[in-house]
Image (cartoon, rainbow, N blue to C red):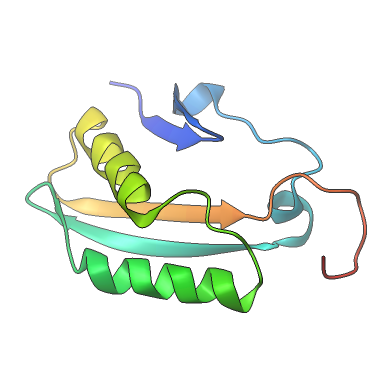
Amino acid sequence: MSRIIYVNGSYKPHADAAIHAEDRGFQFADSIYEVIEVLGGKLVDATRHMTRLARSLRELHMPPPMSDAALLHVITRTIKLNRVRDGLVYVQVSRGEGRRDFAFP
């Protein structure tokens, strides 16, 4: 079974996933991430992780990619599509495409 990921608004096979060459997360590590444990197919301490993700986004003046409820839906669906019972979910949010400028947007 191939791995399924969610990138730029779509679920895709891992091998087909791509980001734009001008993505600031790719160029400058201008992104945040959160790693959430999955036990028995369920997220562990999801509320705490979502709170920390929101705080990190605020600190870097980055808009959230979607509402918490929508993001939890995406994460949960990705877990199900990959049939994960026990493991980790890595969530990364970048600032997205932008001109190649070193200044903080």
